[in-house]
Every structure is written in C-alpha cells, then in structure tokens.
Length: 253
Image (cartoon, rainbow, N blue to C red; front, side, top):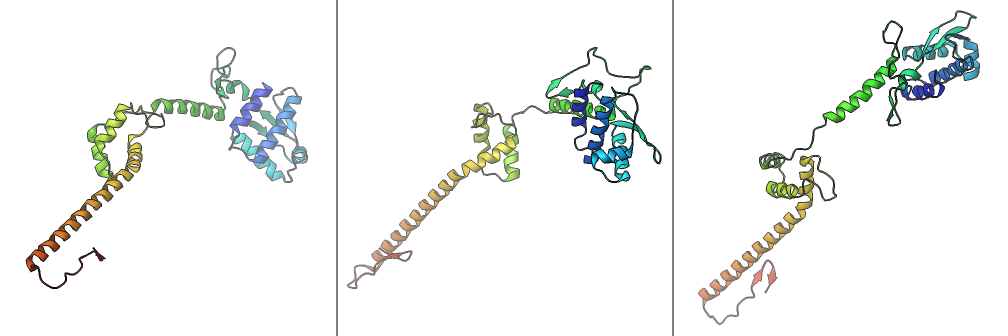
C-alpha cells in the first residue's frame, strides 16, 4: 500500500461523506496498520479507540465503523464483549492513481487496473463514483454547444416577446461587425442576455429623444396660442380700450 497516495485518496474521497468521528477512527486504524507493515487483518479494541480518540460511547464507535464499512474504506469483524475487533484497511492507492490528482492524470506502472486473480473487478465504489464524476465532467464540457449567431427574424421575435425597446437590426449589425465580441473584449455567450444589456445602455438616448419631442410639441402649442391671440386682436379691431396683457400657461408676456 502506498502510504502517501492512500492518504491523498482518503482525503479526497472522504470529503462530505464521513462524520468527524469516522474520519478520526480511520486515521487511527490506518496508522496502526502502517506500523504493522500493512497486515491484511489486525485487531484493535473499542476501549483503545475510545482512549485515543476521546469518544466516550461504544455505540459511537460502532456507528463510525459501520459508516466506514458502508462507504468502502474498511472491512471489519466486530468483536464480542471484552474481545477486540478485527479490521482490514481497503487499499485505495492502487486504483486511485488512475484518477486525475491536482489537475494531472496518473496511471499505474503497468497501465492496468487492479483486479482479482479471476479477472473480476475489485474497484472501490467510491473510486468508481469518482471516475464517473470525472468522465461526466469531460462529457459535459464536450456537450456544451458553440455559440450560434441569431438571425434577424429571431432577434425581432425575441424583442417583440420581451417588449424590448431596441432596434433588432442595429443590435444584429453591431455585433456581426464585431464578430460577436462585446465592449470588454469577451465573446458573447448568450445573445439574449446581451440584448437586455444593449437595451439598458440605449435607454438614455430614447429618453433624450422623448424630451426633445416634448420640447417641439410645447413650441408648437406656444406658436398656435400666439397665432390665435393675434387673430382675435385683428377681429376686435383697434379699439380705444387698452389691450389686456397676453398670458400663456399662467405666465404674462
């Protein structure tokens, strides 16, 4: 058994799978087995485990050992009253070196996986789960679709569906010209998300246009008012009475 690789494998595979008590008990059993030069089976009493771990109840020891067995870290034959239990540390190091560790891929010296003499697999379930996760992550990355630029019809349809106040043509023309690279130099991943940002930064221009239009309309109303006042004065003729000061929107002129 490879001491260092066994520790690395245990540390990685035990994350979020073991209780603190189970982790402490495993390390004590592991160190005893190391001092015994990796005997296949060795004996340890619950009393000794309680002494070196600080655990005060036999039930807590039993629960932790059962969890270690269920998760595939050890095998155990529990002793009766006054008798020590027998333990076997499952070798994680041989199979685990086939897994990527710290971003690098490592293999066994002969390139073959560990198995029994009759060819059946003895792969630890935790290692099998780890391999499947690694394979799944690779497949997930491969399955990610490449960005496909939208058509003008697709952009128009999305603008209408979302009620956006943007020009679909201006949006499409701009990003087509940039090769779908945004202002920060990053590739556009989602054009639908980007068009919302586009609308956000184009709203001030729309508001300016709206205010300008309101000014024109106000000017038109003022011109119409003064024209009507002039027409009224022409109809009344040049009388002796002093003409009243014209007032527009409450302001005398």
